[in-house]
Length: 275
Image 1 (cartoon, rainbow, N blue to C red):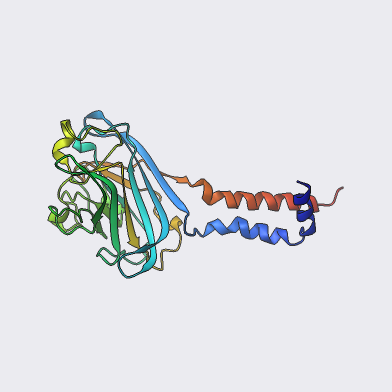
Image 2 (image 1 turned 90 degrees about the vertical axis):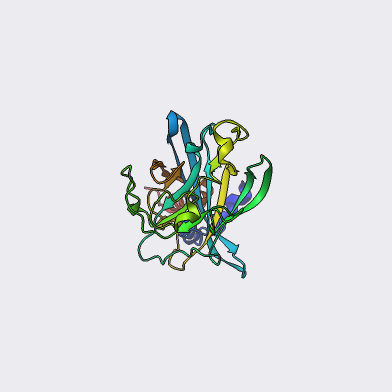
């Protein structure tokens, strides 16, 4: 402690600037910073549904070397999934109009599921999920769409969202028809029984979570540009959707800011002349 106090005293005239820089740094998210959305509600047959969606700036190789990308991870956090109508099947989000359209082809969209239970009941790992090429293909079962989206029969207004990643089209415009017209590869909650009952006929299914990567346009510079809400789709889109999400700060993203502000306040107090 004495060595730290001596260090601060030696550089007390320089540290206020450093502390201010530390406090301002997280205002521009860097690689590793996350923005997390969480929500819960009631799904098909009154069963609980819950999910997490995280966004993170990373580097990703779409086949021609690493490029700037955003990593999106969707997780089913429900206690258990009993019915195919409660499988998580998509996520919708928005960005400002000045951010260029996100790429939907193989050069800019990719996805993987750590574990998938196939139709025969066996589990395979690291399954390729995108982009969607055909509903019956063994991989490429998700699709990224730039919209536009309309209003579902249930009254849900998808026009509020510019982008969607989904394994279920459900007639929602913006997706290319038969490429995403089933709930295959829906995401079930950890610990669910997918070998019998309401989920067996829906296999192949993703166990707990799936991760996607999208090449990031240069205009998308901070995670704060994401819209204030994220819509999580479940079951047969577009009528089943959950929009109860609020951003949850990632502690590591703000620890540096807090430390910088506290340091600045400490130094200011030490430099204030006594009355």
